[in-house]
Length: 104
View (cartoon, rainbow, N blue to C red):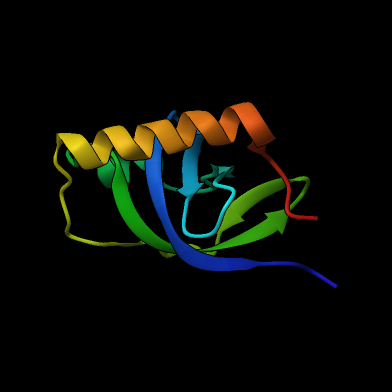
């Protein structure tokens, strides 16, 4: 049976092919490395300040994680205090659990 994850995430950073999605809603926080199969995260969010609050469905695909093709960004910008808090959660998640690269 295939696994998927539908939730709100914080897109913390991205490269040409991957975005780092932070799930901090339920402890412990987790970071997912999500691959973009078509448009790069830079093309989609290049002008947006990080982190970006997005709703997404994450899916397993060929030993990686992808999203279902639609990301719903929330038009919310975060102040310095909240951004610092998200960055700390991101660092904590990477330290404790590493970066999750598969859902199966």
